[in-house]
Structure formats: C-alpha cells, structure tokens
Image 1 (cartoon, helix red, strand yellow):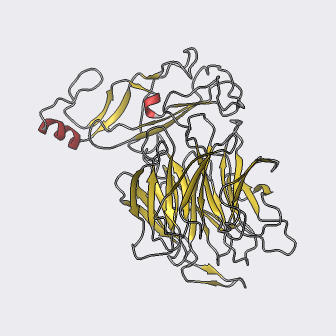
Image 2: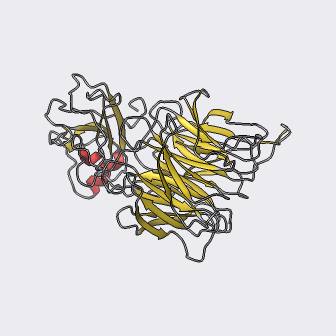
Image 3: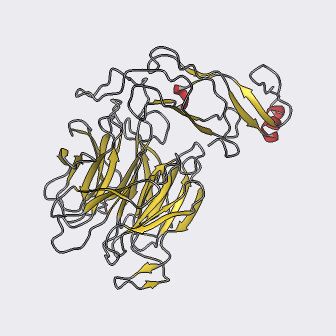
Length: 462
C-alpha cells in the first residue's frame, strides 16, 4: 500500500523480456527509509553504509539501494483475467540487511505495455509447461473475489448444511452449495484453485458424527471432482482441512487433521489424485482431542508448511511443521497454559507488514478470545473479544461474553488487496459472521449466515 508510511518502493521491471516465467528478471533498485538508529549501528560497527551510487549515508531519509532478483522476494507475475497478458506484478520485498527488520510490501497494477505469454492451463499430469516455477518456489497465497461461511440451517427437511459464498464488501449471496446431502451437522471448508482458472474449488469435510471423508467440488456447479476417505471408516469424530502446494507442481494439496477422539493425526494428500503423501501426529500419541490445521510458508523456504492447534483437552498449543520433511519448526502456547478448550488457527499477512501473523482463537470455554501473534517474535500484535454480546434462541440479546469458542480465517472481504480477519462462533452460538479490517481491527461486516435463532454456530473460510 503506497499510501501507508514505510511501504514506499520504487521499481523498474523489464516486462518486454521473452519468456518471463523462466527468464531472469528483477528490480534495478529499490528505495528504503533509513533511520538514525540504523546509521548509528553502522557507525558503531565501523562500517560504511553506502547507497546505490556508492555514496555514504550520513543522515536519515529515503535512499536508493542495490538491485535484487524478483524471485528472491516472492515476485509473482499474474494474469487475473486469463487472457494471456500480464495484468500485475506482485512482490513482497523483505530487507533485513540493515538490521531493522522492516519489510516493504507493494502491489504494482496495470504495468505499461503488458507483455503476452501463453495462458496458464491445467495439466492432467500435474505439471504446467507454460509457466514453470523456479525450484523451491511455492504458490502465492490464494485470494478470491469472495468470502464464505457454512452454518447448519436446522430446518425440517433441509437437504444438508450449505456452503455459502458472498460477494466482496456486501452480504449478497453468490452461491449456496451442499457438499454432503442429508448431513445436518457442522461442515468445514477450505477453498483452493486446483485448475488455475481463477475460480476456486471447494474442499469440504464433516464434523462430529460423520464419515471421515473429504470432497473437492466445483465452486460453481457443486459437482464432485474428488472424494477421499482420510481415516478409518469407524472414526466419526470429524476432521479439519486446509490446502497448499507441498510438492511443487503448482496444484494445491490437501491437509487433514482428525477431530475429537482421533488423536492429532495429520495427513497430506495429493491434490490431483487424492493419494496420501504423508502422515504424522502433531501431539502426543495419547492425546485424543484432535487438532485444527492451517497452511502457510512460515519459514519462507518456498514450500507450504503445516500449522496446528491442539483440540479440546490439549491446551492452547500451536505448532509449526516443515512442509518438506515435517520436522517441528516452532511451537508456543496461545493462551494460558491451564486452558484446555483447544485453539483454532489461521495464518497470513494480516497486518500488511510483509510478515506472517498467527491468528489464534480460543475453543469452547475460553470466551470469544482472538489473538494476533507476530510469527517471528511471538509477540502479541493485537487481541479482542469477537462476540461480547450473545443472541439467545428467542432473539434476546444479552451483554455477556460468548463461551462456545470461535473459529477464524483470513480473507480479503472488501476486495482491497488486504487480508481481513473473519470469525464464526462455535456450537451454542448463532451463525453470526463477523469481519474485521486488515491492519486495524475495525469491525467491517456483521450479519447472520442462516437462521438467527440457530445455536449450531458457523464455520468460516477464505
């Protein structure tokens, strides 16, 4: 956002080069604000701080610095409308070379004289010869021009729990798809673009009292494209799902985590054919409370990683596992260690500061407590109570904190290219959807995605 202090960037990108996806392209230079603290640090160390032209920096201000490879900063060429022409260049420039850990982020839209390249098309073999990624790169965080929620309707004869998709910056319903006909319990969702057509598919699983299967459905028609039984058929504790590219084929893969009674069993499935890729337990083998799951490249190695939150009975234990070999990267307690209601997790650059934030929400018994953590430092960047008033089944609103827990997700609700935080209450709460603006936690949207008198809660997704 060039209007926000500290995020100014100047770039020069040659978009006339042939075969941009495979060729070498980058920044001729970039501009960074240098503080007096940085200058003093170089002086104390006896080192000269030189700008792009080799001139020593002696006072605070904006200065030009050296060239950079665009791929090294997560550069992405984007064809939003799939017409074979470059629409945008998205990059995240993180520069720690001055010791001030001050990333810079920008989105450059509508470059002059767009260059043509072959449109991205899906390939049954899992590869895409038209747009190969450099080794070690991962899909960018997928954002969609909509947001979604799922809430049981609790109506006699209902055909099943629907997945509702809404247009950005409004409560206008775009579509309502039932992934599991006749199942009236909680349905959990994620969305991902499996065929690179710009329209996300739906990944759906069921909550407690169901078969341990997930389905990938067409996001428009609801047609089932893939169905996989993730755990033993006797298990009925439900499961959570997320997605990301773990094998570098530019197609999202699917991560599942067992719900209550199934242990903290995490599995990874190929997004093309549903074959199991990996399997491990996130917590102690004796723990049977299940786990919630999210996906993000937390260690910035170009591969998606797995983030888990312990289920009920396990404390507010959040863990981060490498997507390459599934070793433990980091762990922490999101709330008081004595709390045993579990924790829900979401991950993304919520503060638009070029760094990942970890969104944690307390499970049942913890109140509607939502916290935002800096991934690097694990400092709390913000916290709030998502539901400080409670609507009873008879419609009466009482001024009391909701105790049924909260699930969370990150989605660009108002279509401003900034992630917003969305929340949904757990069981015992009405299907009350809330969205808070990225960066400053202002309430952006509040409405009921279903029967206001329902007490089944709501599950939210990007």
